[in-house]
Length: 200
Length: 200
Image 1 (cartoon, rainbow over the protein chains, first blue to last red):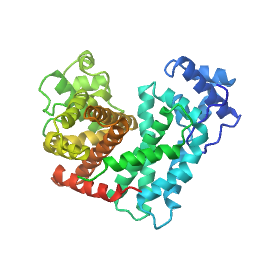
Image 2: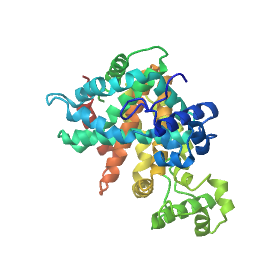
Image 3: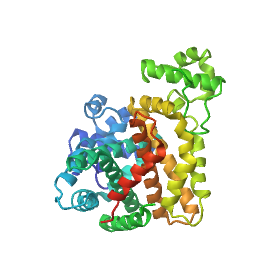
Image 4: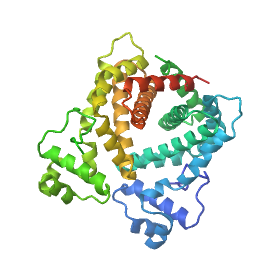
């Protein structure tokens, strides 16, 4: 890989050249080369030029390398809603939050995000963990919407819709080989959403 | 427990008194009594009056006891769409499919479904596995919607909406201590959905 593989959630900065960053990049290289299941922590540590003990100072296990930075997520999601203008509908908050707060953090990391997703897609356990990550996002969105005065059921539904739109947009964006912009993909998703969501 | 704990997905019949059924019920009893993590396969086999070897003839591990019957799910979801009248919108297919095909299979198993969900909620790994089950449902819905001529993106969005509505309805239904009907809970969910899904 020509540039450092990074996590795409969280602070959205490329990994510093410190120990955690080297371990992270070494792990992703090995996952790609030999597969997630076949990669061991000692191999990751060796590739990074560090000890196994160092590895466990930063990560609980090899799986968590792919989910580090997740703790930041609830804060990013909270910002989307907490900073939204008060005249906006919940759906408008989501739309603007995605475009102004979330997408700018993702747009320039397309290759790294694609690498990470490629690895996650190879392993059932990783896919399950990834789904769990989305429910963490969903819970954060629900809490933020409750703070904005929505009823529990409205907050629950809106949070689910927001996560579904986010995940679909990201998936479509990665499926397109070109440098399509996330904003344009979201337009497509909103369009499909409008067609499908017509109440009974 | 006064009556047999059953799986609520799949054929929706109570477990036969055969070996698989006894192992299933023994497992759920132990999960409730001692927790999922503390329960071992030998304990489950002993409680069921069977050998560990018998256990592994039916289940890959103790976790899978809670997800057995899952193979039936795609067929149930496919029926919802494949048997729907051709004049219906996708959302109408979902609405009628829930009420006519899915809910009748759940309505009389409220206590058993609640027990299972209670166990799943105690363990992070089980929660992840449960989310994976929902994506199996989602994939089946997407495939069925593609067969009905929807575009891939419309099918993807509609499948996600359907699963979100299903899961929210089930959650709300279980949260209500009384014998509320699933049909009435779905009305509430559709209502919230209509309020939230207004396009930007």
